[in-house]
Image 1 (tube, one colour):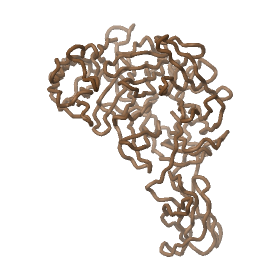
Image 2 (spheres, helix red, strand yellow):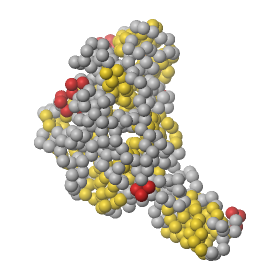
Image 3 (tube, helix red, strand yellow):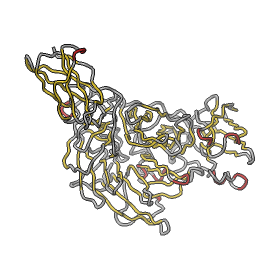
Length: 588
C-alpha cells in the first residue's frame, strides 16, 4: 500500500503554519486513489497569501483552474478546469507568499463501474399506521413496551428495512421492507409527531438536531442505498418548521454516504463517502485488479459547497488491520466508516466497523494519533472493554468514549450493548465505565447508536434490531419501544422538540348517518396543538364552530351532528389561541 507522507513533515521549518491555524492540504500527499474531479483544498491560511497552484498529471498534463475562497477567509480550493485522468500520477505545487513552495503528489483512482440501488417494492400494510386525514402517510407502527414520564420531547428516527450484512458473509443485503422511509419524530408514547415520507428508492438516515448559523436546525441524510450497504445521496438542513434551508452535496465528484452528517462550529459538514475502486491487492497476480471500497471522510464548506478537507482510509489504515477480506466480502469493504466527530485542536474521531477500531486523526498531517481496538490498538483493553464491529463512536467532554457495540455480524457475543470506556493516555489503557443491555439477547447485526443525554441518562437505538431504549446512568431501564419486525433505524436519538409547521392542518369528513359526521384532524409536525375545533356549514363561506375535542395522538376524531356538508378543523393552543385552520372538506 502506498505510504502517505504527513503534511507536518512537508510543512516543517519555514513552512510552520500561523499560530491561529494549521496549514492543511488535501488530497494528502501520497493518496493512492484521489478522485479525477478532486479539488486541491488549502485550509488554514488567508486566500490572499496563496500565490498560485500548479497541478500536472503524468498523462493529462498541466491543468489550469480557478482558486475559490472558503467562507470566513479560512483558505481556498483550487478547482481544475478539467478532470484528471484515472490511474495517473499527479504533481502539485502550492506557492504561498512568505513560505517555500509546498510540493507533493498523489495518484488518481481507477474507479469501478456504477453500482445499482436497492429498490424494494414490497409492503406490509398491517405493520403501518393509516390515517383518514392523511391517507398518503404510512409510517411504521410503534410499540411501547415500557414507558416513563421522564422521556419527554421527541424521539428522532429514520425507519428503513433492517439489513443483514457483515464481513463474515459473501451475501449482499437481504431486506423485507415494511413501508417507505423518511425522517420521523415520535413522542414518548410512541405517537407520530412528524413524518416526511420519501419515494423509493430514497430513504433517510441520521435525523438529529444540530446548530447552523447560530440556530437549532434539523438535519438528515437522504438518498438511495446500494446492495453493499452504503448510500448515494445528500444532506438536508431544515429549520424548526421543517422548511428546507439547504441541501449539502459531497464534493470532488462523489455522492454523500448515509453513515454520518455532522455540522461543525465553522459552518462545515463532515460526512462519509464510499468509493468503489479497482486496486491491485497483495497476494494477487501482477496486473490483476480487484474491487474494493475505500472509506473517505470529507469536510465541505456548507455556504460555498467547496471541499475544505478529505481523508481516505486507503493509504492510512493498512488492509491487514481489517477483518473483512476479498474472500468473505463481495465488495471488499475493508474499513466501513460509520461515524465521524469533530474534536478540538483540529482532530477528528473516526469509527471503522470492519477494523473494529476507532481512530483519532490529526487533520493537518493526516496522521492517526491513536487507535482504540482492533488489531493494532494503541491502548491495552481491560476486562470487558474489547468491542466488535461498533457504531456511533463519540468522545464525551471528559474524554470518555461512548459507542454502540454490536458484537455481531457475525456474532462474537450473545448480545449487543451500549458501552462507555475511559482512556488513560499515560498508561495507554482502556477500561469499562458502564455497559447497557436489554433483557434477553438483543443482537444487532449492524447499525446502532448511543446518546448520552443531559442529566446522565443514556438513549440507545438498537440498529438493525427494531428496538430503542432509555436507561438511567446506572443502567436501569426507563423506556423501551420498537419499530415493527423487519424495520430498523440506523440511529435513534432523543431531543427536546417543539415545532409549528408552515403547512396547514389536514382534515377529512366521513358521513356516518343522515345527520352525523366524523371529522378527522391532523397536522403533520405540530407539537403545540392542545385541542381541535370543528367548523361546519353549508359551504366554505358559512363555516362556524360546532364542536371541540382534546387532541388525541397524531389524528383526532371528532363526531358532530347536524345538516352541515362542509367542514374544517382548527388547531388550538393550550390557551385557546388559534394556531391554523385546515382547508374546507366536504361530506355530502
